Each structure stands twice: as C-alpha cells, then as structure tokens.
Length: 141
Image (tube, rainbow, N blue to C red; front, side):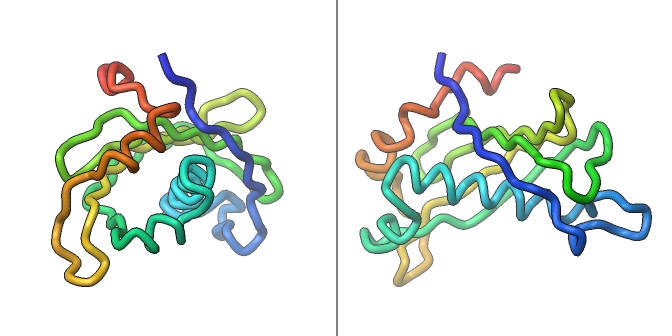
C-alpha cells in the first residue's frame, strides 16, 4: 500500500473570505499545488514533463468540505494516485489542519500532447515516476 505525498501550505490572508475562512475556490489551487509537488518528487519538476512533449489538463473535480480553515492555518496536503487509465489518471487529495480533516477531493487529469492538445496515452516513464505514490486499491475508500 503506497503512502501519499505530503507537503504543507500556510493559508494567506488574501485567501480568506468575509467570514474569515479560506474561500472554497482556493482549495482547487491548493490541490493543484499538490500536483506540482508530486511532479517535482516524481520527475524533478513539472517542466521535465513538458520537455517530453506532454501536459496534463484537469477534466473533473469533486470536492467535499468538512470544517473551515482560517488565516495562518498550516494545511497538511496529501496526494495519492488512485487510478491509471490509458490517457487519464485520478488522484485523491486531503487537506488537514491540526490533525483534523478540512477538505478532500478527487481529481481526474487527462494527458495531452503539448502541440496538438489531443489526448495521448500515459507513457511508461510517467507511470513509473508516480508509482511510489500510486495505490489503485485506495480508490475503493
């Protein structure tokens, strides 16, 4: 069973709404940051994937919120790959603070050719790179 890639991020004042909590739309940005960190760990950075002629685009997102996070809270963000398809992959994201679950999401990205933006199969190097953080059984959770 693979462990997720975990990193932290502190909520900035500008990310909070009039209620004093992190505005919900920022969570997609937080989870996108997790994807960047996953690519950094797997391939040395996002640019290395682009240099190989492919990119990923977000095709689907499902988010669920459990409790608010506030300015200056440090979020612990975890990402785990839960499905590898022919041209797409799914990731599960969790945001926690002080041991409590704040929000979670499931994202589906599609791999595309950088020049044509057409769907393209996941190459072996991509599958191999994210393998340490891949747990297809976790999709059943």
